[in-house]
Amino acid sequence: MNTPHHSDLGATLEQSRSGLRDSHRRSLMRLLFLITGSALVIFACLQFLNGYPWVAVAELFASTLLFFGVWRLKSTPHLQQWVYAYLVPLFAFFLVIMLLPEASVSAFVWVLMMPVLAYLLLGKKEGMILSAPFMLVGGVIYYIHLGQVGSPHAMIDLLNMVLCGALMLAFIHLYEVRREESEQRLVDMAQTDALTGLANRSNFQGTLNRTIAECDRSGAGFALVVMDIDHFKVVNDTLGHEAGDFVLKNISRCMTERLRSTDFVGRLGGEEFGLILRDVKPADAFVLMDELRQRISDLELPYGEARIRVTASFGIAQWPDHGREAESLFRVADRWLYSGKRAGRNRVVGAGHNPRQLEILTVEAG
Image (cartoon, rainbow, N blue to C red; front, side):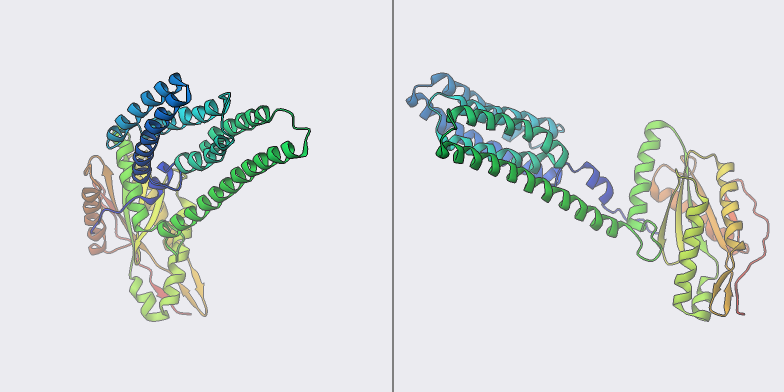
């Protein structure tokens, strides 16, 4: 069996903090650092002219850090910390310039940028947690800046800011919720076999790679099983491909009903399936698969006037005894599988197991 490497979409989605992948967030952060650092240099010069040298010095110091960050963000493994290190001081700086005695009214528009940056770089949950408190404080500062709000004009200004900020936060949050749902549906479709509802080959390969990495860290073992339905071509040739699909769906349901919650099953293609049995000894894996083999052989599937009965053969490879890489495990499991098929089918084969001859059941037309 060829086992090409596929991108693990599920893992990628879990690691993604927002709609942007980490590589895109890294590029965006570098751009923001460059733009913000350059802007702070200009603002620092203006603050000197405006009579606020302490603000100018702070801005120059911040710009130096930002230019350093443009270089450091190329390879830092701590991207999330850099995002927070950028957003928290930036939002705090927005509040500081609003508190200046002669603050421009236009300074308050930066409050509306808070949810945009937070959600874009942190995602729905963390974006809300970070941006909402800063926006609330910004609203309070704006209220104080207006002074008396008893006049209709001041009240209109206040309501404009409050409503615009609230709507901005609500719209961005709603968009992020819908985006996450849509992305999850797309990933599910990309990782699920449409016929059986099981994981497809790409998903199974990604799960196997993750399982190997986890077991390598913990020292636990697992079994990789390759299962193939015996004489499946007879079903297709005798009753048609719809009957074959019917068999595949029922076999898939049989497997998911029998396996443990810690096990994982996927359709590798055609009538071939893969199973990952976590924390199981070789002897226990053999017993479990033999029980599954018996359940499959006992199935009698009514299809029109026909009664379909099939069997399955299993090949078991144990990690790390039979290999530490996915390709090695697949080769061993395939070798045992086809050894069992050559010996008569309807059997479970693995290292140290000498399967007995079993009766082979095929299609019985009624």
